[in-house]
Length: 58
Image (cartoon, rainbow, N blue to C red; front, side):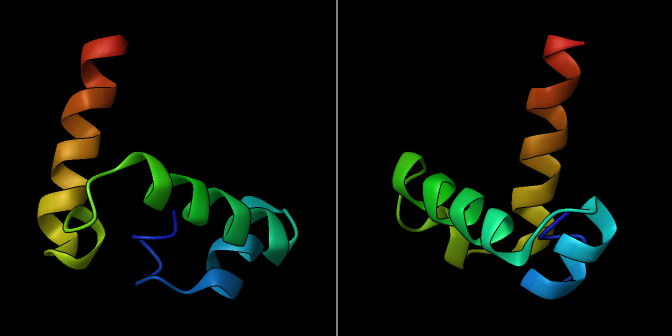
């Protein structure tokens, strides 16, 4: 949702119906788990990769 909302913490929090701090924590955690260049690369490429990964688990 964060990427869908063009990296807006507030917009993502509103759409997820959670506190902004929750989104902040989750984004920070993703940054810790993913390679450092992943979140600075193209948003479209990252979204596509995440969607493909999610489809493998469904």
